[in-house]
Length: 164
Image (cartoon, rainbow, N blue to C red; front, side, top):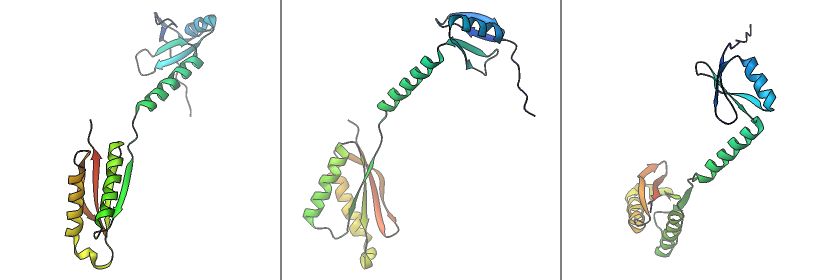
């Protein structure tokens, strides 16, 4: 059985922000209709509930604008991934390091993955050495968020940009 609870009294605030006092919802609706505005419940949990006389369409528009402004100001964190092998040549290493530096300078996190193939897995110290070298090379732009750790057949390290 769906029962609707009738509210006997509400606190009313007019369109200029002045309190009109406590009255019945019917009286408040009559005042709102005379002004050509809407009666909107803004604090339903208060005792008595608080209602405001406003233009509801304008209120929704303003709320949407505030939400868009808040969305513009937030920064989306992107994680860029760089994949390397334990037996990487010096030039290839320099290219990967340069990419990591670019990503960190743009404010993105960098996930460095060292993939092992075949019997390379028995030499994880090679990957450890490679990742620590890379971390020391980019120390000016980023710091280690997650230390090198094995994840299946690959070793993973996460570097986060340093705030300026």
